[in-house]
Length: 266
Image (cartoon, rainbow, N blue to C red; front, side):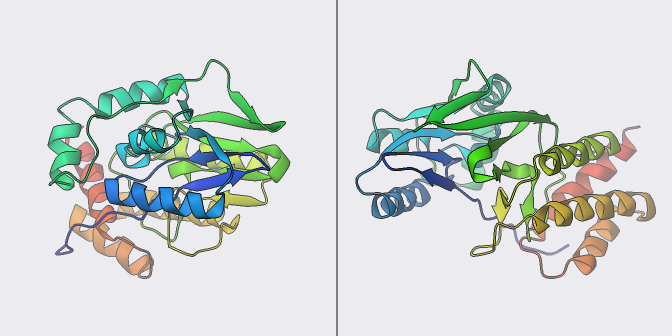
């Protein structure tokens, strides 16, 4: 229980054609976003970043929007209508002041922030290729989505799928929510992707479909542990023993605390 606080690594996915590109999710901090901008400039120096798609409302996946739009003024930041509403809630004092700015003080997060524009349909296109937003409900948090690129057999999964990182159950704090998360993963499986990008993943890891099964296994292990462990501390230790090599064990504590808090409130 004595782990110091840490934050899970965040993935950003760049998909580019001959002239244009789509970015899925952004970093959290100013320095991370500036590094991403330099990387994109090196990867595609003569191409335009046309869209940034936001998979869900947690601020760590979209606080980089203002800096990206400063670099690419024509950039369209888009998300589903439900995600945009979640983004707006993240800017209320309850979340922005009491969570994000406390966790990342000293001007690490750009101000003022800017939310994405709500999509009128579930698709957008670049260079004749369709990008489809699929709403999958409550997974790690409420109103999450994935982005499907059929021509590439690609799913950018946001926080529906994890890649060798301890999963966050702070908001998936009931059996019903965890079952909904499993159904969301089954939606991904039904698309038969060849590549699946996890929202939180170990740096340099392969974006393989094996992460689908691994994420499902972890959810089921956590669910089982909530029924056998007698305290948040025991649940924390149990999951750490089951998955000793996953990144950021601090995430276990958030979920374990939430699970037993929910149990106590019944």
